[in-house]
Length: 334
Image (tube, helix red, strand yellow):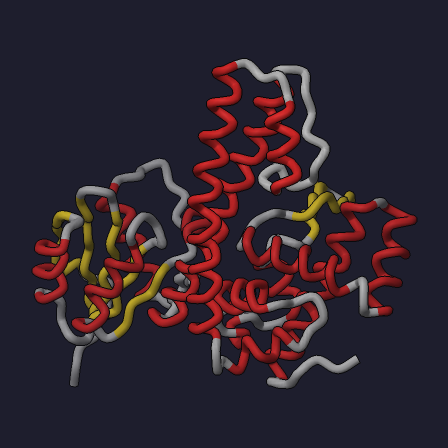
């Protein structure tokens, strides 16, 4: 019979500290190894086949778990926020942190994060890279408008890189340095746009044949890109015990403050996946244009509490719809 062992690893940029416990909580060994392929491989090879290993999801933890997983019984990413609450202590060292992680896993008190499969993780990396480039693109366009404004000029076109906008910029009386900076921004933008098109094609190919993507795209307002975002952020709908859990994961749940008999709620928590939250909000704004129920919800909340609260209300409704569809594995129907 294989004896279970529990290993907690405190991950750092250059080195890692670990503590190994047996099933009764006795410390079997402690040590330190470098955060590089050679030393991580040697550490993985030294582990007992019946080991359960836990690490906080920091730095390159996914790469680390990929290296270790073939050598152990199971790997467990810890939830960093909840572990911090449980392990609150005046004494905080790397050795103590690794011990606490192992002990929480041994006693079945470990709050876990979801371990994303490699195939979904690859798609997730591509989707996030696209949004990273979009962010650069937007920043450069804003920089161009700012540079033009420095010379007391304004570009009326909505898209500052459009042919119409470019013709307008050429007619402006800009200083030599400002014009050179604007042209540099434009050249970088023109270099990014083909990369975005390339990523869009890659996302489309990788999403082909995925049932969850097809279900998501049946919902009004969710196209291929937002479907890919929601799929890679949610991963497995069964890990959410309720629709409220999904809403909370997206950071769309209201914050609550309680003191004595007074309980008050504030704005949304913003804790969780910011990209999923963006996808739900943007998809909701598209969906309300064609879905009467969402349009009525938006208008009702808008007249009572304003635009931003109405957008959040629609995004929550989108989360409820998505939760039901993915749980029941069926397409959306009005």
